[in-house]
Image 1 (cartoon, rainbow, N blue to C red):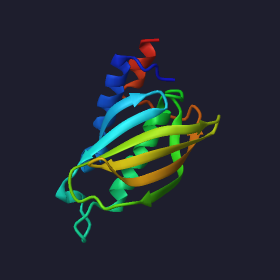
Image 2 (tube, rainbow, N blue to C red; image 1 turned 180 degrees about the vertical axis):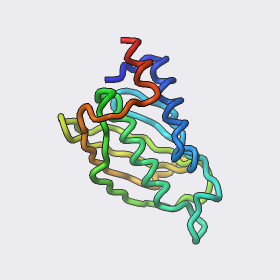
Image 3 (cartoon, rainbow, N blue to C red; image 1 turned 90 degrees about the horizontal axis):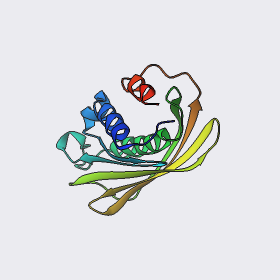
Image 4 (tube, rainbow, N blue to C red; image 1 turned 60 degrees about the vertical axis):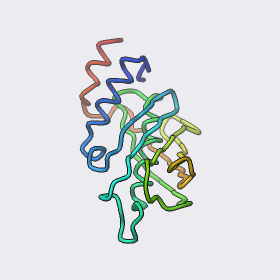
Length: 153
């Protein structure tokens, strides 16, 4: 498990925020706590679909990532987290401002975890997601921050 010290949180956030996909859509990890995360995406025209609002995939992506990162604090560094089901209720379109997601873990078993995410835009709830993950023990490839975190133990 990742000990959530101030230094470890910074290291993990910096690594996640350097992800090519996160950079592509402008997603940023803002906060990580045990069983909780907060992410943001600034609104930009590249996120629009043809009707002039943010594509639903953006809301789904930030919800999925928020729950995965909340789960990250509860698993071993070498475990892989794989989404096996994602359900999103879209409640309102996003036309401007930041997209914020808060992910929480509802249940964690040895192989399956369930979390939920609330996605907001300018304080308004625009999406609610329920996400199920498979925890694949010990199959993770070496991630950039793993050695540094292991050395701190």
